[in-house]
Image (cartoon, rainbow, N blue to C red; front, side, top):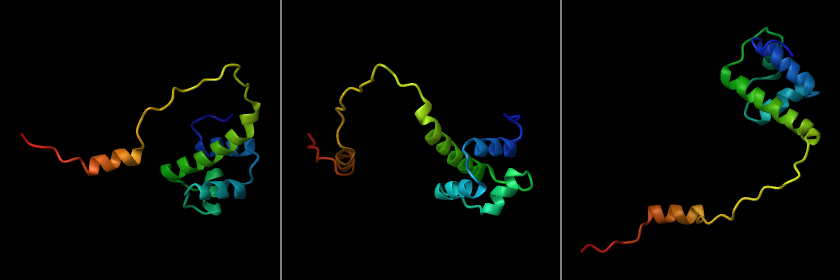
Length: 108
């Protein structure tokens, strides 16, 4: 794995591991709200152009989701299942309605 100091190399490594072309990476990035075009992404991956921190985070999210999808099947399943206790909370819309329209309180 490349030195973590080189973001473009790190992304290039992850893209290769995800078995994505630059076009596929760009489409995944675009689907998550990325605003750069495919040329911006390719230039960044080759160290030839900048990508803002925000856009790098969107790009990281896209490739990380792809890696999760690919390697989820390789996880070892747990023998025990964990159950959460039943929720005793109220419906969020009911709570919001109660906050916006509190019952009239009688003044003594």
